[in-house]
Length: 414
Ligand SMILES: C[S@@+](CC[C@H](N)C(=O)[O-])C[C@H]1O[C@@H](n2cnc3c(N)ncnc32)[C@H](O)[C@@H]1O
Image (cartoon, rainbow, N blue to C red; front, top):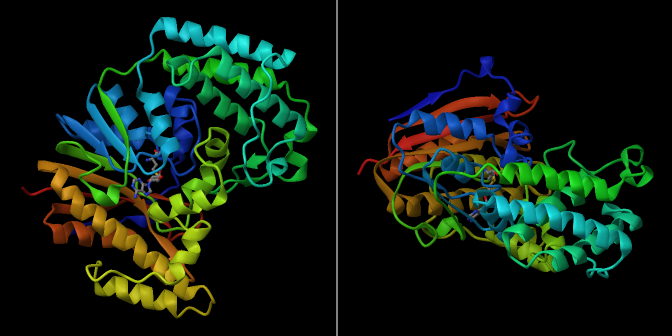
C-alpha cells in the first residue's frame, strides 16, 4: 500500500535541507557539491531508527550519509561510480592521528614556501578544455607550483597528502572563475572575476588547510567503507546485508556530476580527456554529457525494462513535444527509470529482513510534462514487495511550484 503525503501548500525551500547546511560543518563542509543533500536530513532519518547496524548509501556523492553514519558510531557502507568522489569520501571518513595532523600543518607551510620560491618546479597543466576560462595565468602558475610542491612534502596516498589535496581542491575553486548561481557550475561575469582582484593565493591555501585540519581532528567512532562501483549492478557493489538505506540518487534532470566535478577531476588526474568524461557520464545514472547524449539518440529500451502505463504516457508526451529534442529526452527519461529499476531489483538482494529504505529525490519537468519520479519509485518498491511505501514531500526545490523533493521510503518484507 503506497501513501502519498504531499502537503505542497505548506512546503518551503528549506535551505537547511540542502548542501548549504553542510558548508560550515567540519568535514561535511570540506568541498561543495550543489546536489549534495543536508546532513540534517540524514541525521533525522538515522535517529528515527532505533538500532541501525549497517547503513548503506548506493549513491555516495560527497559521502554525507556514510560520514553521518560513522559519526553516529554505526557501520556505514557506500559506493559511487565516480572515482574522484570515492577517493574524497574515503578521505572524509578516515581517522587522523594528532601526529598526522601536525605533519600536514608543517607540510602546508613547507609547500607554500617552496611554491613561492619556485623551488619544486611546476606540475604539468591539467588537460581541462579552455583552462584560461577557469583561472588567470598567474593563478595557473601558482597552482602548478603548489601541486608540484605537495608531491615533494607529502608521500602519495599518505593521510597528510590526502588532507592537503582536499585543501588544494578548495583553493582551486576559490581561486577560479567558477560561479554557483545555478544548480550547475557556470562562470562568473566580468565584474565578479577574481582575475581582477589581488588575491593572496598562498593565504587562500593556508586558510583552506586550517579548515580541513580542523575537521580532520574530529574523528568518527564507527567504521566506514567506500567502494567504487555501479549501483545498477548490486550486490557486486555491496558487501553483506543492510538494515537501513539512506540515499539521494541522481535526479532525472540532466545534471552531470562529471561536468560539475571536472575541475577537481582534471587537476587530480582522474580525467585525461573529454571522451573519458563522456564515457563515465554514460555509466552514471541520469548522465548526458558529451558522448552520453549522442548514444541516447539510438538507445533502445531493453526487453525487461520497467513497464508502467503512467510512465509510458509521460514518455509519449515528451517525445511528441514541439521541440527537436523531444525524442532524445524521452529516451533520457526512459533510460533513467530503467537504470533505477535495475538498481532497485539488485538492492533487494542486499537487504536484511525488515530493512527500511529512504530515497531522497526530486521530480522534474520536460517541455511542461511533469515526471513524477517519487510515484514511479513508489511503484517500483511496491512491485518488488516493499511494504509501508510512502512518498513524503519534504521541500520545494525552487520558485517553480511543481518542483518538489520527496522522501520515498519503504520496508523490506522478508
Ligand atoms: C545526488 S548525488 C548524491 C549526493 C550525496 N547524497 C551527497 O550528499 O553528496 C548522486 C550520486 O550518484 C552517483 N551515481 C550516478 N550513477 C551511479 C551508478 N550507476 N552507481 C553508483 N553511483 C552513481 C553520482 O556520481 C553522484 O555522486
